[in-house]
Image 1: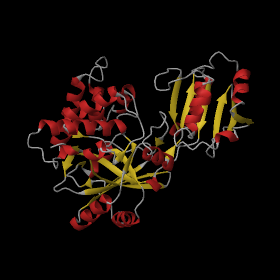
Image 2: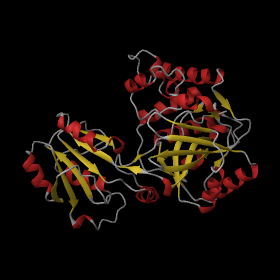
Image 3: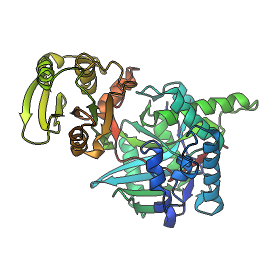
Image 4: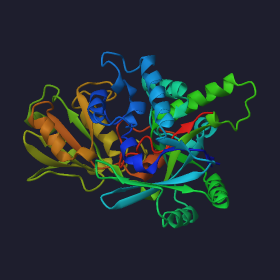
Length: 413
């Protein structure tokens, strides 16, 4: 059964939370981060992407980058901007986007649960990105950004959380992107124990977002275990920072595809080949898929509605039945020659948060030749794939809103 336990969080002082909390390290690149932190001296990006404070010619993987992150983290603490909670607690973190609210419990998940697959994964991780996050954890001695976990809803926990958030929030601000962030400290000892016990009866958690962070937490946790001759299993390095959301509250957006060329085909030849896979109709306006099995395509200033033919409806495999998997196999690979979307530089991916106009822009300026707008993968599909021990195709899910870094920090000792 899953473990989720209280911890002593370092949190921003409420009046500075809006200035400190920042987008996660992996949603903006280094140049965008440097621009973002101009006139933002206490933004947590100075911790999560500390290369912003160093010479741009220095590799983002240089050890001096992680040392700078440690320095910046401790500076926030020394300045009294991040304060450690007096006692271990659980917390609630709420995000509101476009009127929709999701409530997550903030605490620490178990490294052993990660390795024993009680915390289930659905993505492959890349070693270079794993090592990047490992070095960040090793040198800062902290988990500075939470892993986004989900679980199948438990009514009793939902009722407890609803009661907690009926009280005034400890932290409450609207970020520059319009998303509202709130947090509450759960101080009642009996209530914390009740939540921990209820979650201990949950058979599994799922990594929704943060596979590299969770891998790094697992790797560094095992390193600390091996290096400690008096290891007990209760030390803080055995646990990692996470926000746990009930699955019904999550919002997965589309994750769209752009391709640079048609693999030597003319537009007409390409559309003819697509006719072997889809029922095709032209759209007079932007076409955003409304159901599984539909794909929008933008090419040559025109939108098309592509609907997978009926022989694709009876695939029982949880991975191969995904729209992104079908598109990859029958269009991107067979027609366009993109065998491995992880490594082929002819393909790019755009999160649905940027909208269909971003697809039009990149095709219209001749950067890309064709764009595919996808119907979002569902949480149920994600969990079914993780339950089967399988891996999703790359860039299958885009979760919004993103958890802000700097709202909670967990030290390993």
